[in-house]
Image 1 (tube, rainbow, N blue to C red):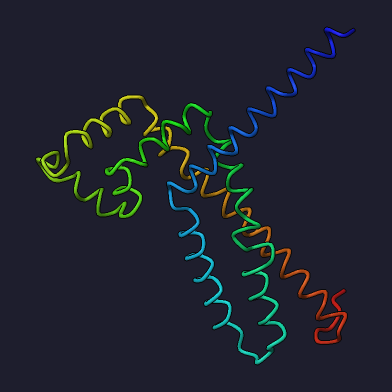
Image 2 (cartoon, rainbow, N blue to C red; image 1 turned 30 degrees about the vertical axis):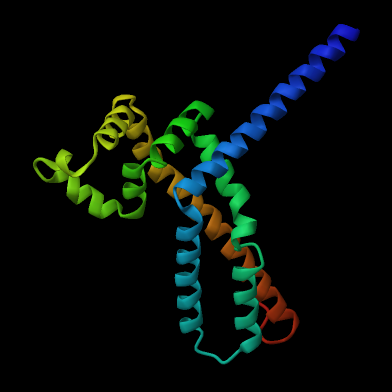
Length: 191
């Protein structure tokens, strides 16, 4: 019985260690890929559009929407754990380490900071001359493992999961605001 408890405790420890490692690697991934900056930029754009689309001068409604974006279920702090999980679930720990390692290189950061410019640069004949030897080696290693292709293939799936998560949260906020407006008599009850 004592051996069984020891094995169970050890297994739980290993599972917790793996979860922490996955979480840390997922966090590293969203940091190196500058996901926070992109998320905040996208949310600012959505918020700006929402503010412009409100034709009414309903300051209460507008303030509630802004509060949800800044402090509520659409804030970075609220969204980050789920983004970490999406990345951690999409790749193995080894893959996350390798992807992060590549994107931390100078050439990897060029790809993150200016993906379109980078794509244009590598389409030019003799593009290799624009990169250092270590950059070329990092790119060659990343491409040769098949991980670059997997990351490209997973990109669309990850983006869809993120969009779905954001839409679910936005719809929840809209339903809550509608309920509040109905309860306060600002909207008629629907059948």
